[in-house]
Length: 102
Image (cartoon, rainbow, N blue to C red; front, side):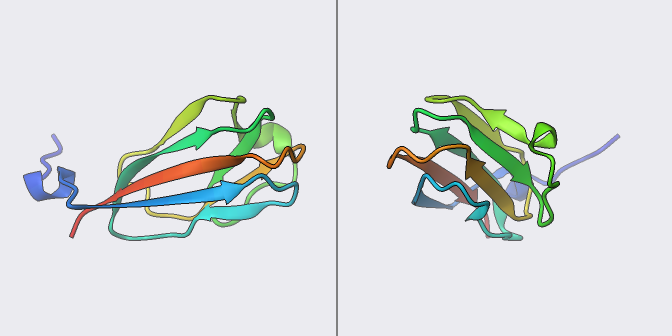
C-alpha cells in the first residue's frame, strides 16, 4: 500500500509558457523537482510529437503524438524534461501549464 502525504498532492504555484512551432526538437518544459503535473495544449494545425525525458529516441514512431488542436496531461509527479517537435511549422504554438508545489 502506498500512502501519500496530502502536501504532495497540492499545488500552490503555476507556470504558463507558449512555445512556437518548430521542426527541430526542443525543450517544452525543463526538468523541475517541484512539478506536480500540468497540461500541454497543441494549438498548431500539425501534430506535436512529445517525449517525456532528456534523451528522446531518433525514431519519431516512439514519441507520443498530440494531434492538432488536442491536449495532453503532464503525468502526475513527472519532474523530468519534456521535449517536443512538430513535423511542419505553421507559425502557431503550444501552451504549457505546469503546476508546482513547495
